[in-house]
Amino acid sequence: MRLHSQSFRAPVSYSTSFNPSMERVREWRDTLFFNRFPGFCDGFKEAPAICRKEVQDYINEVEKLARTLYKMIFQSLGLENKYINTDVPDIPRTLMGINYYPPCPNPSLTLGLGSHSDVSCLTVLHPDSEVLGLEINHKGTWVPVLPVDASAFVINLADQVEILTNGKYRSIEHRVLTNGEKARMSIACFFGPLEETVVAPLPVLIDGNNPPKYRATLFKDYNRNFASSRLQPNRGTLDFARI
Ligand SMILES: O=C(O)CCC(=O)C(=O)O
Ligand SMILES: [Fe+2]
Image (cartoon, rainbow, N blue to C red; front, side, top):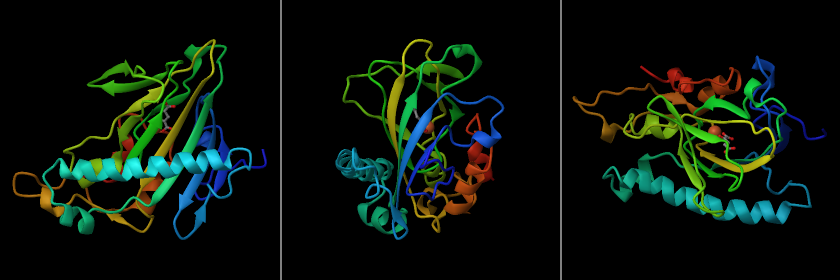
């Protein structure tokens, strides 16, 4: 319990969900978070010695993947590299959560993780390849995400990408079910802008036929709204910026 903290600013922290104080029903998971916050802290350097090298090696590779994919998202919309390099906010902020969902004696009473969309730019998720549980909301129906193979990642587009692309890409609503018999593990790495970054639809994607759907918000305020609320279904975190 030495590491227990609900602060997203703690370099290394342990918690039982994103915001237990707001839950009507307790979620069924434990998470160890490592937080790399340039200019402020590097939780990977402070990781427990028993796993420090492993989490550092893992995050260094996954960061490269995330930056490549992030750039490709904007390239796929026809934006030039020069514009992407100067006008699309960088994603220097990394939060890694190692999730453990213990077996739940009564799975119908709670979820491992309630319905939400991720609030940063994109998430590289390593789901458990044997124990199912992750579901996405596809047009109103919950669909299980089936493992491709043990080394496959799942990439979630998150709220800030929806805002930057003015809704051309949508952040995905997802949740994790509990399992009556087996424990499940996953590693979620969230990549986002610095807190002082203002995020707004990219001007190049706005015109008379595509008016802005979101206002400009400081990422710090967006994050604070997420952290101080109950986990929001129906991609409710986006309401904070929706026009
Ligand atoms: O455990 C999973 O598969 C998903 C985790 C997740 O959605 C999250 O940590 O935001
Ligand atoms: Fe998530």
